[in-house]
Length: 165
Image (cartoon, rainbow, N blue to C red):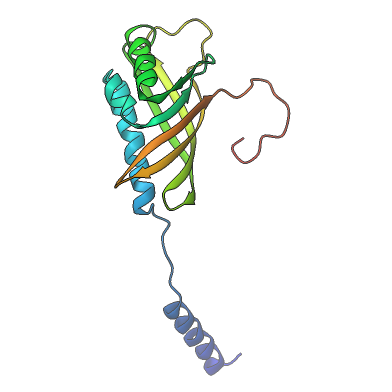
């Protein structure tokens, strides 16, 4: 290809790039709101504020605990966190990583991630990390938890692991 042929190719590429819009994947405002809720969760937990934790749920939301307990409504969730943070989880630190947000509607999302607890006086053999799924809903201008499902993957499982490994 001669000089003029190469110049045409370069000009075509420049024109194509100029007309294409490239977006860097940044969280939208809805995902940012969900990330803020997760940060509020961590802050409330790490400061031992059971009331603030329960306030992150809808009034009729629920929480399934790792030990098999089911807590329905903010009052039961408040009791669960009040007792937990006063006993085995006192002085523990909680971290939530965010893996994925999937919006089912503009006001309803499924949130998946990983959790980890350090410190405290956890019973021997009790898990200190795992995964979670939460269903969140936008209420007025803020996001709230409708349902929370922490879990712990099986150890030594030899089946297919999917993308998360």
